[in-house]
Image (tube, rainbow, N blue to C red):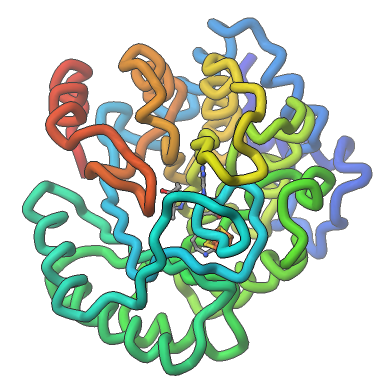
Amino acid sequence: MLETAQNVKQESIINTEGLKACKSEDKTVNRWSVDEIVALFELPFSDLMHRAQTVHRENFDPNAVQVSTLLSIKTGGCSEDCGYCPQAARYHTDVENEPLMALDEVLKAAQEAKDNGASRFCMGAAWRGPKQRDLELVLKMIAEVKAMGLETCATLGMLKDGQAEQLKDAGLDYYNHNLDTAPEFYGDVITTRTYQDRLETLDRVRSADINVCCGGIIGMGESRNQRAGLLAQLANMERPPESVPINLLTQVEGTPLHGTEELDQIEFVRTIAAARITMPQSFVRLSAGRQSMQEGIQALCFLAGANSIFYGEKLLTTGNPEAEADKKLFAKLDIHSI
Ligand code: SAM
Ligand code: DTB
Ligand code: SF4
């Protein structure tokens, strides 16, 4: 029998040992234990897909996929040590450092994204966090992109008190800040900011009434238990993120994670399905890594409940499928973009 939200709630209350205690009854509705999520991963593939599809169809139009375009507004030279990231100054990659882009260049890129059918424009900066002087320039970008009729998203690193409110006032719809992985694997990947730092930024975003975009990276050498652990963190948030990007690690030469054993892509599909089941009302974004996926795997991701993608030839510094190829794929799968 399929679980209703109510059934999940009853079972989950019994199985949440070890997870952060909930403060009030209504905060447990979407609570999942890591073991319950591992049990989803362990289902026969067809059963898992059926569960995910059922949840997807109860909550979304299964043929509609949200389309965001990314732009790196400030590239490279980052002080952090995220082991996957080609933009960290300390790793020797081919990324060339570029200063914060000028407003008119950003608006030109946003217009192109809109003309190509994107509904959301996401601006990313390789910062530990924004300095006030830089933030003021980004606020102008957000206000003008919003005025063009696009939804706005930004990913600028950690936010200090008051910064989320400034972003909200400028018209920011979504803030992307990822937990990246399970708490117990996190220290193997990043040492210059803590898991708690990330949770605090996410709290600031939530409190400022900005939609939360938060997910992670799969294929960094984590275990299945740790993949489930990341999803548990996300699904058990007081309010799960509105948007959950699931990235497949794009391995970049010069980064510490280059050379990690490649994850079997069916395991990636299982991760998407488990994200869909545990976060029924969130948009689950099939994010980085699509360039390494055959169309069949991407189609399985959509069947598993992914309903958002990054569209356009570039992510931040690495490649993404050609827009034309995505148009053809959508046509083959009868997907319409939203
Ligand atoms: N500097 C800001 C920060 O880290 O919060 C914003 C930009 S950062 C590049 C945004 C996210 O991109 C990271 O949190 C990570 O999840 C994802 N990312 C970065 N490099 C990646 C890679 N090589 N493969 C997959 N995802 C990656
Ligand atoms: C997210 O979760 N994935 C995007 C977005 N949020 C900012 C970034 C992917 C970056 C992939 C590596 C690169 O292009 O530099
Ligand atoms: Fe810097 Fe963000 Fe890359 Fe980490 S992920 S090194 S914070 S740009």
